[in-house]
Image (cartoon, rainbow, N blue to C red):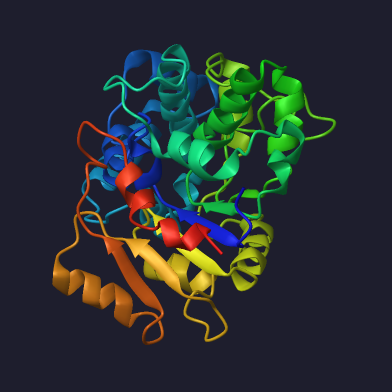
Length: 310
């Protein structure tokens, strides 16, 4: 059981090992399209030349992320949302077909966190874990994995476990394809891996929020409240983008210490990240890992065991 108020701040790297695209991968995916996806774009009211213009300009923009492009090109948000929903649907189906088992057959960081810290043998008490998750990711792999593991570990229904997992705050700053079944009272939800037909893609697209879009303020406010009350913040797969740091008020002098991962950063870049926070408030946990290789990111969590104790 996690009794310290630990807030996990998750970026695209946290879901990369589960088959979801990194920021660069998503940009590349949205810069091309096949005939089937184009047909859906046409059905949604977008002309082929509009889509191709979006793709061409995104690919040639020189920007590192889709969000950065959309901040500068709000007129393309509608196209981007449909395309993002299409890419998420494909990744969900791949993950669901694998039933949560990674091809390398090794423990994932979701599994490690679940088995080593969150599950203490009492199903009803699982929702009492004091951790919370603030994610920049659209994907629903975290809540799916926690609910699936709980359901299989205790041999009980998805619905019962979904209600328990829903007690743990998981804030999607930029929305998601929609809630999973059992997570929001009064909403049916869309089962994991079953987004695919035209109506479900459009419904998913409508639930996605791009950076700076009206409606995202409430999510950022909720996230800031969780971060403000944390004992420790642990970032995983997070890119430390200036705009996000500013919106989350992470440089505020009232924040707790931030422990983060810096996958792929040089030492100079790590220093530059740390300099954006108050002195001694940022501690690099680990710079290199298998996160983008053929293994899980469990080492990130294992390097930080002390964060969950006490």
